Length: 412
Image (cartoon, rainbow, N blue to C red):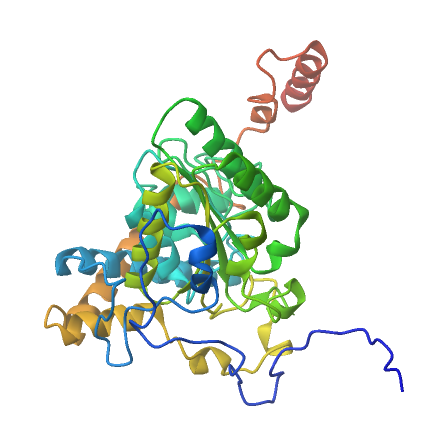
């Protein structure tokens, strides 16, 4: 008897009211994955796209060939940045709930991605982030006050009121503007990397998208160009299991890992524990060295979990178990690095609590300063006439006419 074809509908392993189930994750023991030479052929390292590069084991000890052996003082600094990211997020979430800003998105559970990769990249490298990379901005020197002012759309807003809150940018820090049209940053990163290669520079580009954005056409266009022209770029897929309310299986994650998406084009993929700062740093450094030496692009899948809601407009209890974050087998990236430093004798619970309180004071002080430049309801307000600036190199007559008319209306 001939079997009829059936339409497959991806389904998450657990829904609200169910026990969390992460049995679908293919985990590798810490230290078990080999670290090949950076000049390895893609065909010889396909296993990196299906296994999971991990350094920290369940006892918080660093294991295996991917251990970057980072100085403890540098790890303490990394922990501080990660904790600052979380404290900042918590404050901004509260501020949105108070009606002081219109929108916000937390990076809870994904802090190691931005900080570890920022550590591995050079200042001249260009970053094309997504909307949970606020730690990247912090690490590269963007002030908390400026990030808050952008969320307030006030007189110090770097985007002059033209962007949704959390869509920062920084020319000085070489961080491109975040786009609400998901996936567009991937082709931008590849194009920038191609230009760097044409100019004979050793700067590379890096970009980030979530698992859901891998289903966008821009993702595949970028991979094709990167592969053909061997662009010096790192393309990151932050697989946090959920694209808003849609399980990662809808983007194809249940078939093969996202790290394997580029194999058909000859792009090597590395699947990495996205909650292990040491593993992320090491894999990113490997990919960066490969790109700088003419080895072309690398696709990195960072396996992590979105600990909070997708945004302040989302209620995750509607589509996933309430305690799923606590059951994620790769844990909390901040807690794991903290426990690693404690196990090595370079940190303590008391130091951690003290640092957290210091960072709360720092974030609160930044918020108080940001409000001085205006809020949504309190002066000073952003001058509406700035909407005509930075649009054309030379403002055309029709816009000049509109500007004059607006000024006349305001003055009457």
